[in-house]
Length: 342
Image 1 (cartoon, rainbow, N blue to C red):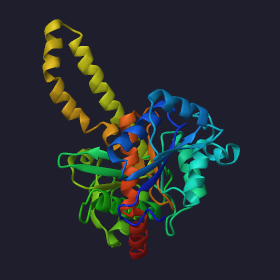
Image 2: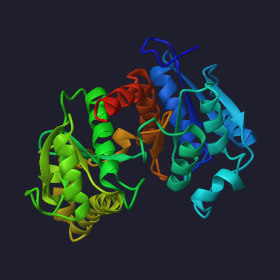
Image 3: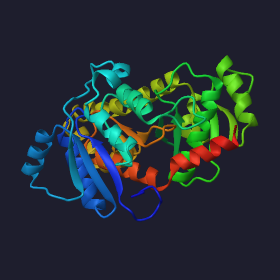
């Protein structure tokens, strides 16, 4: 059955049940949440230690024919060297799940495991889309007017200008088809708005983007990321990952500051309590759980990567993200637009 045709066929999602910090509990609970909400559109396969998974499902008293289990005897942990796991752990839950997708038995994979291992195994097992030098992952940032996505945030470092052009193409396709943004605005992260400013990488990338068919608006600075000037921002993964980790730390700092303020006295605690609903609404835009995970763009398949600490809610939304990417044929659109820009 071809489930990537945009019809009402069920999308087959593999969940790496041994990937996250709280495996397999959160992965299983997230899968259950997804099926309770979209059981008529999904078929989910939990890949991992079958005994652990079935024991937990039995405790939940949950039975659903659309929730399947495939055994995998090995687990990739955070201490494994990512680039070596392809050979050292061929029977891991990640590897088994990717093999199922490669054999067309599944349509997408979600994993909250070792990010480097997920990247390496996905690329090696599924291969790259023709015309893609390096796959990329992006992160969604809230802005004054909506969202913007930054590519790359850690999948590729020491990039060449052609790689950043590919990121811009793939990011534009993603924002167009997943977020329904017509002609997404693309910005190049640099140290100034002038085209002559920046490193050799940014100056040469500017020339490539300027000649492309993309809606390129020029250079943007770090302060522009949250201002909503663009829909897509491209940069080297070394820079992007620092931006991502710094932004996540700011959210943790804000939560800590609010708690410290509340702990200073009874009336301050009451005031924070009165503001709690407003604060939660504001902070929600920065909460990864609502988005779930990020799509690894540029591979011949669908891999959604999430935080190791992902909650069941985040897992559920990762599953929904995988379904959406398959139904909207994002990979097919990337192939088409890449050919137009080559």
